[in-house]
Image (cartoon, rainbow, N blue to C red; front, top):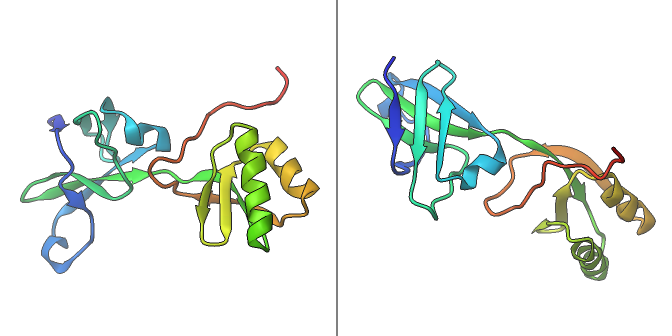
Length: 154
């Protein structure tokens, strides 16, 4: 099986009648890989895929990495555990986001929901403010910073 080198994103994958006969290969990746310009991946079919993108290009879920007459190779971002907080008022949202920022943690606001890394101290914050929250798996948006670390004692 030959190695494929990716130098640019070809678009977003939408399965249409035109490509129903093409074999789809998936490159699974963590959110942290979305911003990396150069790395080596393995498709779900075992093909080596070399990612060599311009520096400022970020991969997103369902980006088409390669396409020919018989196959298409598509990026698939793995969902991550996040806290989804649901403040009830704009004032509560402002206070919540202020405290999250004061703890130097990233957050993503989407309509009336606030998404943060799934950290125990952020759950404690939501509980102390009586803000409803849940733990969910989400594909994170581009630019959402995550840290694969924990505040647990060693």
